[in-house]
Amino acid sequence: MRKIFLSIAAAVAVAPCAYAAEQSTIILDLSKSTTELTFNAGNGSWTGTYDDDAESIESQCFSFQHFSFGEWNTWWGFTASNSADNKQPTNTLTHQWSNMAAGGILLNEDGTVKLDDFGAPVVSKDMPYLVAFYSQSMSARPVVMTFNDGKLYEPQSVYVNLNSYTFYSLMFGDGFARAFTNGDKFTLTIHGVAADETEKTVEVSLGSFSNGDLTAAKGWKYVDLTALGAVNELYFSLSSTDSGPYGANTPFYFCIDKLAVTPAAGSAAGMMAADQTSVTYDRDSKTVSVNGADFAAVYDSLGAKVFQSDDKTFSLASLPAGVYVVKAGNSSIKIAR
View 1 (spheres, rainbow, N blue to C red):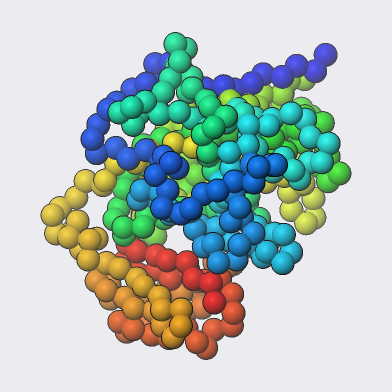
View 2 (cartoon, one colour):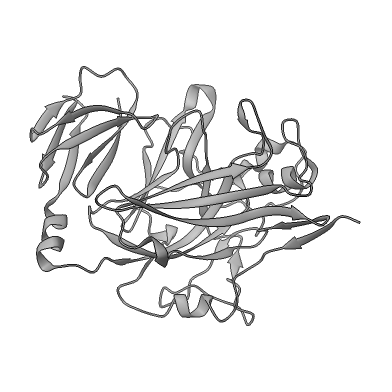
């Protein structure tokens, strides 16, 4: 008999401690988003998902990068959703917006994560959360989160969950992927990028099959991120043992909620430098302005460096139309031109 083991939450002894009520801890709360988040009444998707001018989802210090080709109904990176529909889909793509926990995580009045008597996060169908799509063909780093204030932060934890489309694909297969069998694994890797571009990673099993049993992250799964240290960027990648000559067959979706970070410890001079670093872009003149950094680098959507300048102001008019990321010091912005 094929059995399923569902990973619902981390051990009770771990999760409550991680969200001790500390004033310096910032926990993602999409109700505080400065990006307008309205949702499709039919499928729960963010109405900006296919809007090519929607460059990111901003909330508190977080900037979740979003990319789309609206004409082709294609998106990657992060989008938002309030779907609570986790039933097995008849049309799999309609379930790219949902998660298996059937909602986002609630917060207490003091801003900490609300937990039940067993230490699992309390979920509400009315609470929005983030859905990510990792498109290997679109970019070397297609799922990226940066900090919109240019400062360094120390990630503490995050909750992750399987997207409904992906979960049922692991279970039963679909038109592209086969059902998981013994030895199969579906893994999320969270990359923390420090100011000097060095990386540390945390791996999370979202699905594995062994001894005839599928273990899958159906509920919100707590992940400790303290091993990443001080970072100015997080990016996310996926891997699956169900792969072919053109890459993975498993649908590369996952969901996250309630990312928690604290300001990085450092000298007053270091924090002052971070405060003074900024990058801005004037869309009309196609000009980038840099403050507080010695040089800036420009990367295309595949992650390749296409331009570098030590000028405080420089033009991107010579670059072909597309999506670019400009990095200078601890700051980065995404540009669509």
